[in-house]
Image (tube, rainbow, N blue to C red):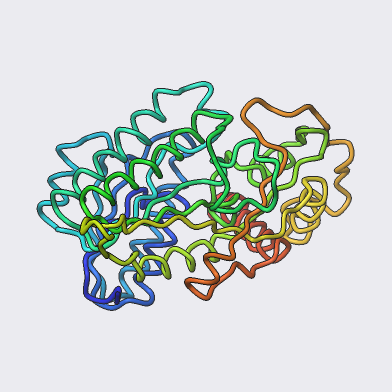
Length: 355
């Protein structure tokens, strides 16, 4: 599929990944009509979401694309149906979700509303106002306590260790059912620890930075024996855009009924980093960017603590299926990505406008 001159609905459009996907469409695909939807909730600092929205508006000025933003909730079925009826999107990129593993223990209702009911509303709308491709965010969290590494999309993922992970696995199951019943091409993307400028403050790299700037102690879980497959946001966006353009093929089985046009892929760097090494690189880049002074005593601000409920010791993506089908694998290394983040952090929080 070409992404030029078509209508694309991006939910979670003021979120970290969503905003970057929208800006990429503006940059590369002439004449697209982009419908953005986000409820702008205060799970984390709304100022970041407003910053991303402002960036989208600025990018749109230099684009031939049309942009329409709705402040609305996925759980509001009437509004979702109204958007589909009026704009009839060709492609839906569903990135809106209540994120966070630990928060799902504190506020489970938010996950049911957004990740289950909200996703059901998207599926129903995609059924009644047929779309050419539904792309949706899943998560590496679905692998739970999987002992086999790297994690492959062929692995069984029936043992979630958090409600968040359970909702994401549910999304994959629901999408499969709707693909089978209604021949809706759908692709789920299991993201692995996405990071970068203007990211989510609840992610480790961002939270660590905030604490270090305040002179607080950072807690490194599982005594530093965690490994994470960090994936820079530009790599994620490249994967999303390539997937958008290639929906799973519609075809019938031997019984004459549709085979589900359904796929799931990992998007991850394939190079899990030890958290202690990650903190070391982060600290060096924060000093380099001038976020922290060169004589900062990092050792005095680190605390090794036990594993948190809902966490897993390692995430490690086998992204070979993505490379096979789309000719792409993430390439941006951790130091480069954290350098971009540190420079953005310095400008956003410590620049002239914040003095």
